[in-house]
Length: 141
Image (cartoon, rainbow, N blue to C red; front, side, top):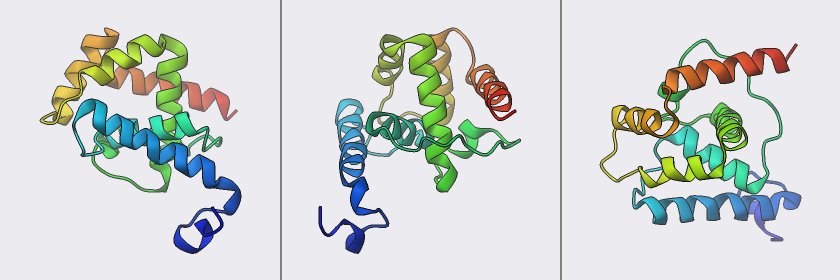
């Protein structure tokens, strides 16, 4: 714990948050057997959610969050991912979210993830993303 600032970009007070975040990745990878971190928005969002990190709302963007952050990460993926995972869990329940995770497989593509999302939630990933963006717009007013 005393060396976290020397070996990472995190502050000493964030040690346990970082541990919880990284352990979330470890469990996710072992449960899904994917080892790929895809979709990035979901894996980073879940890790942030489980660790109680990134309380700030993301910056609104016009492009597709789920496409941009399927296989890519930048500083915004954590906030977007946390918001989207939070909305899935809080609005539709943990059980539904676990159903989605169970459908993630090592050979999953972006398209197959979209199909599994629709199978789980009965609406498209695009519809969900648009609802999250509407929620964000209202929250930022």
